[in-house]
Image (tube, rainbow, N blue to C red; front, side, top):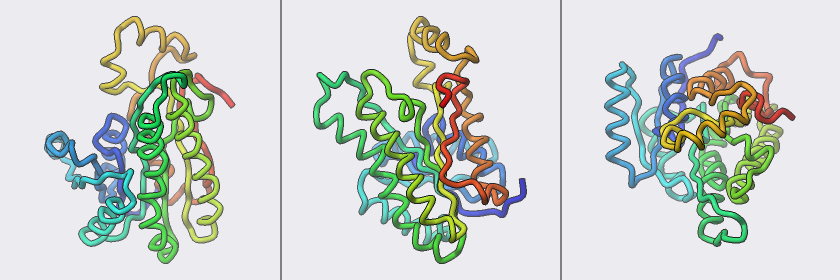
Length: 249
């Protein structure tokens, strides 16, 4: 999988899936920068120390990706220190699950802002550089629930479905300029969040998956690494499911 060393930015980089993505991109020789939510600075610094113990030098940068201004400030700082972002992984995401009957405007807006608006906020400040350089890899982390919907997740499902709409349109704008834009839609993944579930709830979820297990974060990261490589230059506008057969479309 031939590829050059490039500057890669991963939003939500210190999360379960984000960590595996940062590790994968760093291990393949890229200069990775992990973006974290500013109130989690202490957590991010501990995360960075853990990566250093693994032999990985991964800078961290705080930004509220739901803010266009703060996202632009972050991109400017990354560019100033490391160069233009050539690989972007939009992985930041939150949940505020409620049935629609109980869904309040705040829960709706928070999820749309963080999970969908962030893709515009972070991608827009790097887009011109990608066009000028004739190269770019944008990888948006969606969800199986953006493909099939999920009870109690109208906000999350709408945001994740919208993320692939963003991918498909932007892929057409970047295709002639050497920029690919793709979506990955994971199913259930083994992270600290799913590990904290009650055993019976976790087992009930696994029973719905034909492979009878959750994905490992490294399995998501492997596809990110593939899409980020120079060899993946002819793949754009795609939505790649990684869900163990949970949803086949």
